[in-house]
Length: 380
Ligand code: MN
Image (cartoon, rainbow, N blue to C red; front, side, top):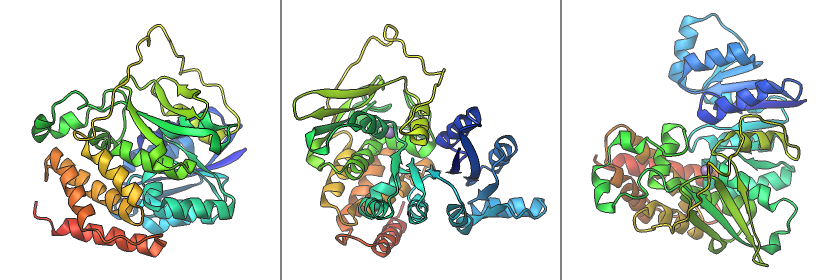
């Protein structure tokens, strides 16, 4: 029996994780869940999946809850509530919190020697060196819950790192793959929120539209698999069937394929090195008989280029990249800036950032604050 905790249970990945746990009651025990602002959904999940502990991480939502309900010692709130959950006795935690603040939970979980199923890619983008070092020191596993990295992981198992020539990340290209760059100025929020293949939360859907998501995934792959940036490539694969590939030094290429579903990466992180039967992922080669590939357009999707540069420069550049992206996506979602401004704001942030090499957690926190302040000073 594996004891599991889920941070960010009301999001798309968290919801699917709960369904997997529910399907295998003899394999998994749900210890805790946390949600941010979607109180209604969190309470429905509490009722249906019966976790021992619940955290309402948004302070306002927690206050609303407290005002309407009797005190329940198993329901906590805010940042402290989240940190408290990380101290619970569990075997593995899924961190599917949205955005850069998820880092602090990742660190706390690893410090507590809890295996990490990592869906909060912002954790590793910002603090890849800290997380991977700490995980090694604490003998903790970081299992990727990202379709590309799960694919890479599945391709690499049983191979030696020195035989890897290239990691090839696939990307659908998002909703604006065929749109001309001069049309980017007039992209509306609703257009950017429509992803052709994946149904996800709004932040990551925008990250897919700007392709910053793919840029983050390059940095994520660098840290998870200890591979140099020059050996990580992206290829556009609009069908989203091949989730990523590994090319070995003898020229052999392994790929991992399935219908676009997060169920497999989530489940595999929970069951590794085992696999469990799942009936809803039948793949039909005849129905899916076209696999196509295109080059990445780095001029059109500047965010990918900015991410490669920030990753290669290292230090706290990826922190600035990540926080600037989080905040500019939020500004776009609130109609404060245009779609095309997202990459501009991030680039300005990076240009004015003074990086600290081999950063400590304190340096990272400082870089977060610094970037937040930089964005606040912008006049939108
Ligand atoms: Mn992904």
